[in-house]
Length: 298
Image (tube, helix red, strand yellow):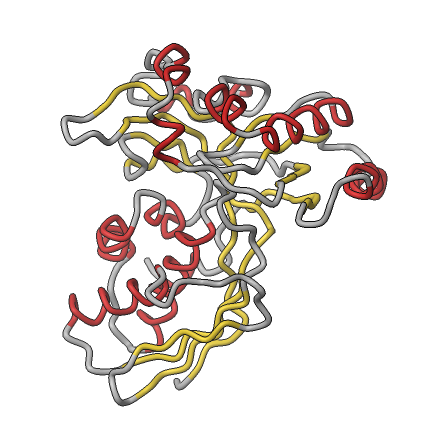
């Protein structure tokens, strides 16, 4: 096998995000519900025999760093396994940067999945997830295969089953500085107590997990910092009746009626977008029950 094409790296949404503590090393402990959505970057990966790792940007206007998470993931896999093969990684970047949707982490996870197969390494899901954690706290989720209740700094996953859901997602042209959000006094005042200690099995399929349960503890700080986040939340709430920030980025979303009219919702979002300046992006998205490459590893 010399190449793998059209590999999806889907985004995620945090349906809620509670900060429940802080580790001695400064990392915040969280409880969250992560879902995959059908907004994705696309990777095309070709095997090289000279050991070199190279990333090539396809049709992107973003200035991506040369040593991004895709490249770091490939090098880490080489170092861990002693593999002497290399790869050309072609990345079609469709997800907005700084959105809190895990785009870079998802790219890294898809890179690990692709090279594990292309290089014939045979690493298990658990082995790849352990490597992924060294790259970023969100990477293990994208290797886990599907929606999950998440704890720790993002590495403790409790897989769950959820019904198909629809979302309107909106992001302005700016981003958010994660450090500024986590140092905000508003974060300290809004921090949750542990909502479901250990997420026991009895809590993993309850309706309140998707029907308005919880909130995003980072949102008050983000709203104070960013007028774009405030405006996005207001626009979606006024149009769809609810809105929430995802992760620690600048994207916000509304959960839509499962039985609603997708065409009508597309038109409603387009109406919002037409009055906004250049640089805004939005989309009607659907949740994914499984990662497109989930079956590549056991």
